[in-house]
Each structure stands twice: as structure tokens, then as C-alpha cells.
Length: 199
Ligand SMILES: CC(C)(COP(=O)(O)OP(=O)(O)OC[C@H]1O[C@@H](n2cnc3c(N)ncnc32)[C@H](O)[C@@H]1OP(=O)(O)O)[C@@H](O)C(=O)NCCC(=O)NCCS
Image (cartoon, rainbow, N blue to C red; front, side, top):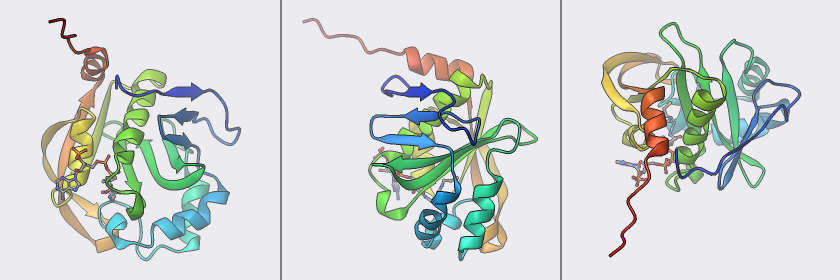
């Protein structure tokens, strides 16, 4: 996205193939075992798990260790811890799926409403299209989750329909809006500069 001041520091994390991404306010980096306590603290609020497909609730330290040990192991996966002033505030990821790469994201509740998710997701998208050369990205948001839908719309995603998605924390399926962003639209959005008023 045009407003993003993002730098990629290649191979900054020896544990993982994912780079470190810097935005105006955030740094996105590979997760590590040191993040377990922060994951448990951030995921203590049920509102995060019930809006994501696979996060268990309640969320314990074993869940955190399992998550942190299993990230960035799949071909095409790029999972980042989102940090603010070096402290973890959430996670965002591109994950390979049968029907194409899909993004996911969450932030600790005390960090909602300040534009951080949009900023992190834009960095994730720039990485997915700019560094990895994906052709399309997909995303989903529960129909009851307007904040997540808004993040996707602000990042250029287009609505493609509704389908049921399994939500682990509620042990059930829930209607989910589906979204898609393709490389050509992303390129178009990045190159869109506003006219300058001259008189
Ligand atoms: C979805 C989530 C990541 C948003 O994080 P955030 O940092 O608050 O998002 P941003 O501030 O970048 O943008 C939120 C937008 O939604 C809007 N919004 C928030 N609550 C809303 C509501 N109830 N109705 C309509 N819009 C709403 C905000 O006004 C903002 O839009 P704006 O910039 O046009 O004003 C966060 O709420 C979260 O972690 N939720 C739980 C997990 C989740 O839903 N993950 C996504 C699905 S994988």
C-alpha cells in the first residue's frame, strides 16, 4: 500500500525464513519460544479465539509452546509476531491452503481501534505479493466481526461470498464472509497517487 513505509531486512532471523518487516509503528518478526508468555496473556480474552479458526480457548502455555514450535514450517507459510516498542501485541500470517494462500491476524484487545491491524496486514500483503510473488490472497471474517471486515476492505480485499467456517473456540461452524485480493489490484492500489490541487 502506498502509505506504508516498510523495509524488509533480509535473513534477520536465523530461526526462520521469514524476514523482519518494519512499518511506521510496528515491527513484524518471526515468532520464537520467548513469545509464549505474551501469547498466553494476549489470548486470555475470548473475543480473539472466537473470531479465528484454530485458536483454542482457554489458551494455556502448552498451546503457546505448540504454536510457537510449529510456525513457519510449511512451504509458503509466513507467520509473524506483531510487535510495538519491542513487545508482542498480536500475530499475522499467510498460510498455504488447498484453494490458495490465506491471511489471518489478531491483536490483543487493549491494542484494538488504533489502526495497528490495518498497518500490520498491509505489511503482510506487501510481503506476500512483493517478496514471495503470490498471485492471490484470500481471507475470511465472521459475519459478526465488522472490525475484521473493515481491515480487509481498507487493505483492498474484495468480498466474494459467505461460507461456513469451523471455529475451534466455539466448537462449531459460523458464517464467514470471504474476501480476495489479487496481485493486479494490489499493484494498482500501490500506484494510485492523488491529483495535486494546483488552483
Ligand atoms: C479484527 C482486529 C484484528 C482489528 O484490529 P484493529 O487494530 O482494531 O483494526 P484497525 O484499527 O486497523 O481497523 C479496525 C476498523 O474497524 C472499524 N470497526 C471497529 N469496530 C467496528 C464495528 N463494531 N462496526 C464497524 N466498524 C468497526 C474501526 O472503526 C476501523 O475502521 P476505520 O479505520 O475505518 O475507522 C481485532 O479486532 C482482533 O484481533 N479481533 C479478534 C481476532 C480477529 O477478528 N481476527 C480477524 C479474523 S482472522
